[in-house]
Length: 166
Image (tube, rainbow, N blue to C red; front, side, top):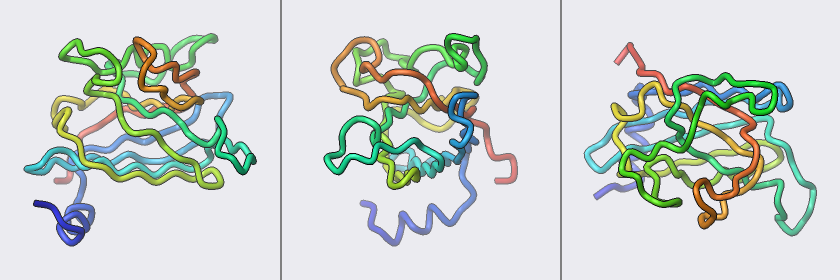
């Protein structure tokens, strides 16, 4: 069983993989990293993102919560309508309905434009998602709408790369 001391010791190590997150042309201030650590219990995902847009509402309305997914594509490129179209669809090797795709992750909650998230998942191992993309959307995932949770526009992207200095 994990405890806070063992999680901290894992996070002090070099991650097994990392994605550098960058915003689209319309969201150039977004940047961050997502680190993945393979453990015996699953993958610890540590995401730290800056530059998210902020809704100044006191009621937590749409604008402070961002959908966060692993996509099956291997490129953060696209076209004028979708700057990350080549990220393709959610990573879903078992052909599950949404929100049971292996790439469906907990949302990011913005705190004055900054988000920090640490969670453990057994939906994939690090090797399975190498060279896949991580996407941040401009809307929260509703965890219902097929096929992708009505998450809105892709606003930031990073490619998951193995850390070679392990």
